[in-house]
Image (cartoon, rainbow over all chains, first blue to last red; front, side, top):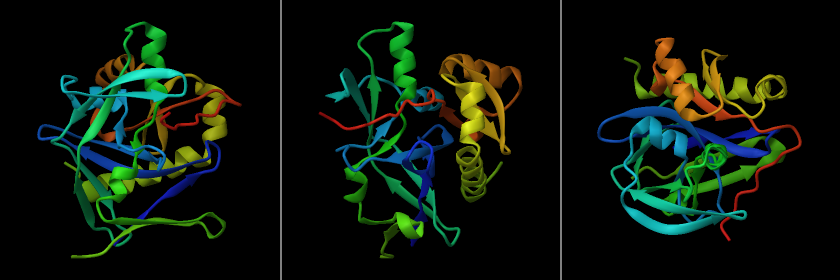
Length: 144
Length: 82
């Protein structure tokens, strides 16, 4: 099963639409693919939309020169659409970043960090093909 | 209520529309957070809480819109964990 990935030529990032589901809510959103990130990160805005509690402390994460406290949330499903219009549901923990400061500019900086699909996603059995010159970019998962 | 597949199909169309029109959107909404539905910007604000308030006032379901942050021109975001 293939999941189509989009190349945003302006932002120069690879994006994939997804639905995020908790036991209580679902929202539509998208990920930026970041194989340099060891974990999948849910951005602050989407954690607010989902009402995810920020109470289970995990690693301290640095992005650029900023340091954030991360909070892990386990009851999380990511839903993708395959190129055959089938649902592909992956259950995996996500991390939410919070600033140490509640200053407005710090919160606005948090809003700028997109959802990041990290290397832990590939550990779920997905292979990743990225052929920019032929605009063929996709994840693939073997059907069990 | 839309199925997940319907929602993802709309979302993919909205994301493609956003990417195709990014330069114009960036001119108008730089440094703001925007909500996209039906290939339109339906709300914008300077932060997520204000945006959610506006969507509620407009009676738009915030769970079914795509939300994107508009970075200024000539600003790129490089994301890597140090």
